[in-house]
Every structure is written in structure tokens, then in C-alpha cells.
Length: 225
Image (cartoon, rainbow, N blue to C red):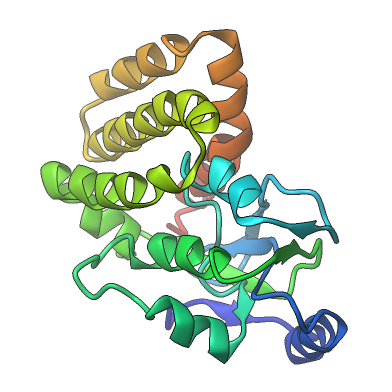
């Protein structure tokens, strides 16, 4: 995104990751969250173990619940991009979510616990403006989930699918709430509680809900959203 940032040390980290693991197709990392004026308001992490080589199934079991990958953070090889076919231009909102899943299918993934990028939250971002058409917003997320869910074995799908569908419903409700429909927050809570203890733990782990919400609240409270 044009309003996100590379932080000092980004290029050096990217070179180190690529040179140190030539077999890895996709390198992921956390990112700093900044407000409209560039002040840090949080950190966006991935629910992945650091510095371990991960397979596609491990990543997808978490990624299909919520796109927890910040756009400026990943590094991937050109060969992996060409193999997976690049971005789906029909996905105006979830093309990045889709491409992370496709890249993971081309080779191993490693998560590095280093912050070398910054993701900006503000009221005119695509996340905010794109979510105003609720039906299209939901459809964009469902397309990605349903496209990649069949890659998981049946035993994993039975666990992941209910949480992934609940996460989409929560995202839609949060979008409605940001537009002034505060009753949508009640609907979101009901969806989460309906998952039961195990599903709730999976949802809270993989959705990074608190990280996503709290940083935006901080920015709004200071008038910097």
C-alpha cells in the first residue's frame, strides 16, 4: 500500500532471510501499526512460531480464519510468484489474503519475529471504505476461504471451517458497527460465543482481534484515525 512504510533495516533483513533460507517460498513478519500521522499505536503479529520452517497446512489452518498478514511485511521469491499465478484481479479487497495462501502452496514458510515495516490505519483506508458494501465485503472474504479450504485434510477442515465462517460474520458485524450500527457488536459477540470454548480459543488466537481493534481505538481517541 502506498501509505505503508519500510522501516530502517528492512532491506538488510530481507537479504538475510532470503540468503539464509533459499528453499523458503514465503517469509512473514509482524509489523508496527501507525496512525494517520505516523505515530505507533500497536503491533500486528502473526499467530505462528518464529524461525521455524512451516508447511502450507500449518499456515492455512490459521490464515483461513483471518488474514493476519500485513501487506508490507512479507518477502517472497519471484519464482514462487510466477508458479502460483500472481494476484487475482477480481479480488479488489482480499487479493492479498488469496496470494499468501497461494504462495504458501509453492514451498515452505518462515515467520521472523522482526518488525521492519509499518501498516497505517486511517478512516479512508480500503479496509474502512471497502467494507461499506456489506454484501460485497462478505463475498470477497468467502471467495478466499472457500477457494483454499479444500486444501486442508477433512479432519482439519472440520475444525477450521466453523471458525473461519464465524470470523467472516464478525468482520461484517464490526464493519457495520464502525458505520454506526452498534447493535452489530452484540451480533458479533453472539457469533464468537456460539463457537464454544475450543472454537473461541482458535478464533481469538488466529483473528488477532484485539490487536486490530485496539490500535484503531487508540488512533480514534487521539483524532489520528
